[in-house]
Structure formats: structure tokens, C-alpha cells
Image (cartoon, rainbow, N blue to C red; front, side, top):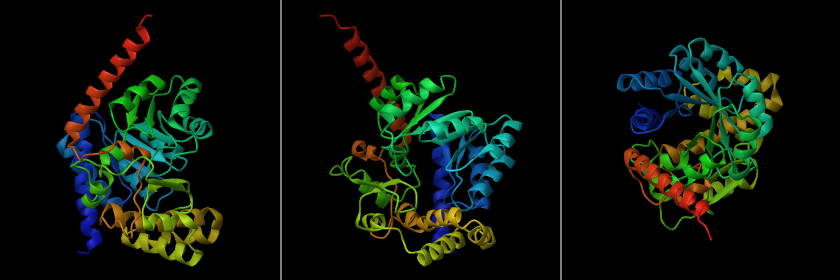
Length: 340
């Protein structure tokens, strides 16, 4: 078995554990299927089900190679929640609603929010500029209340810049119904993220300024951890031959048939070039997240890195967040009710 296969198996094992734990102690876990092929996704879903009968979800970044296949597996397995991003998911919503499941669409602005709702999304994850990976150009402080006013009947999950209980309290005050803390939960003991990356992210010397934001890494504006490799990747787009080579290499490592990639490169060049860039970035992402290779890899991270100073268990983190949120809400209530 190759090293990359070992890494995928370990990642898969830990991903389903954290998905289960999140629900048991106060949240809903979303299985990240990015590094998994269809068979691995099915196996992970079945293992989650063997540990809990509570709701959980899977994520499908539709621009990534293999994402549609993973979404189809989730539909076949009747996963309760499918979180889609970077793509139109009307076909997913149609199938999911037939068995009573829900679609959570990740969006970054009003236009995408409107389109997602029209395509059948049941709820929206609003990803602000502060977020890891593909946050938009509007900050969470403005995005959440704006979308909340425009779509008052749609459940909203706030994402981008949230890493503790104070952030949860703020998100609820801004009009969100829930809060996603990807960077924070990625840096827990049960997370599948490589230990080397957890240690770097939680280093007390790191701050909210130690990230880079730009579109040259994978073709879409993204936020990553500042490093020599990410700085180089962000300077300029990789040359075309290298992009195509890396995209094919990533597909091979993820056991995705090249027949799924080649036709698009020929018939839909402009669109597929963007997808190829995205696929090419997968190699460096895996180096960081699975192998822990900070020197050659690139790690998605949000500005909430400035709030991450330890590596707790999921249980301890959830209890801490709830306690902090209650204290923050009480402080706000007292401050607003104070009289001269």
C-alpha cells in the first residue's frame, strides 16, 4: 500500500470519528470528502452510521475532481445533510429531497445565495472574507446581517472568522442560526489534520495576520497559511503544462479515472482550465493536511488562526465554546441594559 493510501485511510478514520463526536456533544459533524474517492466515501459514511444514529453530513466541493461521484454515493447512502460548494447543486437537491434529506449550500454573496435557494438549498453557509479556503470579498460582519435580511426564512450558518464562544454569540446576534468553525475544529485531537500542521497553527506566536489571500494558488480567491511554499504559490499562476500534469497526478492519487478529466479539457477548455488549477492544488493541499509537510505543502486556514492557541478534544472545545458564548451574551445584555 502506498504512502498516500495510508494517509487517506487514516484521514478517513479520523474524519468519521470527529463527525460522530461533534453531534454527540453539541454539533453536527460534516465529513470532508475532498481527499476521498467514492469507495472511501461510502466506507466512511457506513462507519459513521455504525457509531451513531444521529444526523450528520458530507461535504462536496463540486469543482474538485471526484466530488460529484462522492455526492452520488452520499445520495445512495441517504446521508441526512449534503453540504455543497463551488458548483450548482440542483440535481443533488432533487435527489436528496426525495428521501427527506437537506442541502446546505456554501455561498459568499447575495447572487450565489439567491441561486442556491432557487436550486433547492434548504439552508446557507455564509462564508465571509476571513474564512479558510474560498471566502468571498465581503466580511462576515456585513455578509451575515445582509443575507439574513434578504432571506429571513432560510436557516443560516455563519462561517469565517469564528473560533470561540464570543464568535458564536456574535454570529447569532448578526442573524445566523448556527456557526461553523472549520479552522478551530481542524485543530483538535480527533481531527484528521496532520499533527505537524496542528502544532504550527496552534503556535502562540502565530496571529490573525499570518495568512495569505489570493487566487493564484488554485484559480479561485483563497486564504491559506503563510509559508514559503504558499507565498511562492500565490505569486503567479502555475504554467499550463504544470497545471495539467498536477491535475492528472492528483486524479491518479485519488483513484479518479482520467476519462473523467480529459473530455472536459478538450470540449470546455476555459472552464476545465480553472478546474485543472483547482485539481492541481490538491497535491500541495494533501502534502500539508495529510503528510504534515509544511515546507512543500499549502494549508487552508482562516484568520481565526489568531484565536487558536491549543489542541483540545472536541468535547472540551464544544463545552468551552458554549460557556464562552453564554458569558458573552450575558455581558452584552448587561451592557445594553445599563443605566446612567
